[in-house]
Image 1 (cartoon, rainbow, N blue to C red):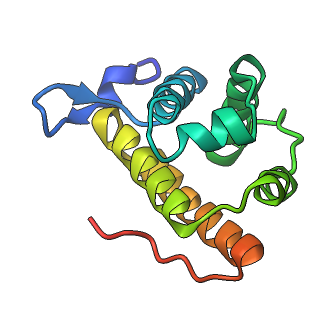
Image 2: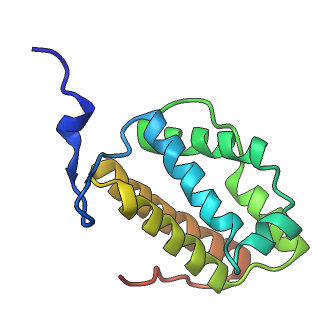
Length: 148
């Protein structure tokens, strides 16, 4: 008997299809690409990423795939400084709580659209901790995760 197939980990989707968990690099890559595609066209977040941070997506996406692979899979490879990067953007133009709300909303929506399972839940919890920590450290504010 071999290792279980990826479909063995699939669960029913609310839309009727099947989704897997974020338990491999390819799934994490797909999530990150989908999520940042949403951000690039978002009225609230696109200006922060494009005009303030001037994100080079060709560099940013692979770094974030590495980051989430470290968080979810324990892979090595990410060597960035999350707080410092966001502090730089905040110094250029102050972030607001609505930025954290929208970032988290899009992250959760992106996950829930295609993935479910323990890794997907961990990705949402970790994003909640990121937003909460950045709001506290950059804005000196309490950020409560928006409810469902």
